[in-house]
Amino acid sequence: MRRFLYLLIILAMAGCSRSIVATPSLAPTPDLATSTPEPLPTATPYVQTFPTSNPDLLLFSTRIQAIRVADDDGQNMANISPDEIIRLVDKANEIFGPAGIRIQFDPQKDVDLIQSTVIANMLGTNDLRWASEMDMADQIAAKYPGKLVVFFRQKPVDEPGGKGNFYWWDYNFAIVPIAGEKICGSLDDTRLAHAIGHYLALANTYTERYYNLEMADEAYTRSGYNITAFDGDTFSDTPPDIYVDSPDYQCGTAESIMLTGAEIPISRGNLMSNYIPRSTLTPLQIARMRYMLAKRHSNDMVVPHNRDLQHGFELENITILEHRWSSSSVMDMTPYSSRNWSGGKQLSVLAGYGSGLLVEFSVDKDGVYLLNLYATHAPDYGVLEVEVDDILVNDYVDLYAPFIYASGQIGMGPYFLTKGTHQMLFKVAKKNDLSTGYNFGLDAITVEFQK
Image (cartoon, rainbow, N blue to C red):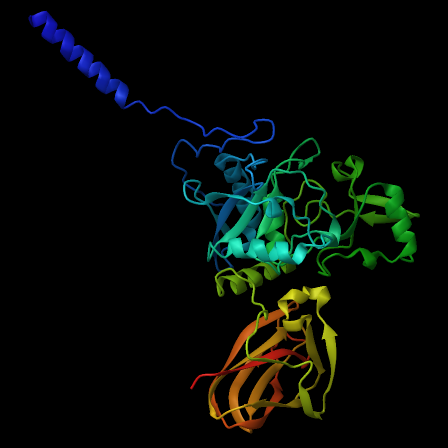
């Protein structure tokens, strides 16, 4: 009897022991040939370490949200593990360290997945559906306010090179392909850092991609041997870059190429070049990135825009009563992402100190109205004062920026208006010390009845 009790106790203990053993399981996939199971999170807690930051720069930190993308039916899920994302993030932090920028990432919290054939296949500005695709990606990114959203995609889609690609600063996400990204025989561990560079308003150092030296030589000849025609970012501290997409040049050690008897320097090493290895940033690139990151931080990581305005008056179509030592013309904003401007256009005003523009608008009843201005920031724009019926409603509208982008909403406060027409004066009061001029650009005003 005593032996029988011992046996029961041993069997019970064995059953308890088996009950606490965790067995990993993977969800079945529709087609193992084209789908991949979700990678498991890193087995041990991940503690991020950062390189020493530049002590002369204020430290900026931003957290990424990694989103693995699959088609609508779950096929072609981006086969990247949290550990692989960690490797890309660590490389980005190594590159951004001198810029005083840190990319934060927690593999247990900052990885998600979506099923969207649209996101999995969008190509960029050459895609006829690009505007709607971009809007959809922006809507998904908006679900992660305050984060830098990165879509990781499995497909090696044929993405156009140079200015035609979809990495840029006027939308609120970055895209990193998983397949087809081997460079010089190995996966490029700088591709996330490069995509974030675009997200923070850096252009490629090159203008076009040439698949062999002969194509590059023909382009150089067509340019009239003008090397500045190949300046992709216009920064004075990054030289013009003729990008020859050939292993002999991209993966070599040569510091220059020969075109029609001229020796052209190669921008090898710069993050925004495509010559390997790429890991450095110039002072002007760092300044641009920090400016854009600060701008995004102030707006939940969303780029300001002038879209979808209600109760608005398009200033390119408004009645102009008077030009005061100024002139104006309607400007198509397509080269600067026209979707971010209401109607895709703005009123461009050439002006000097003290110049002004007087316009007219109307309301259909007495009441308190909320007034907002939607304008443009640019390197040669000044600081405006805005008056309504000779009453100052905003005394400091600084429209300077190191590059051109839509301002988003600029408040002019609640204001009582009587039924009928009213005058609004835009007057140049001064300019930002960094601005090269006193010009300004106006998109629209909204006049919304409150009570």
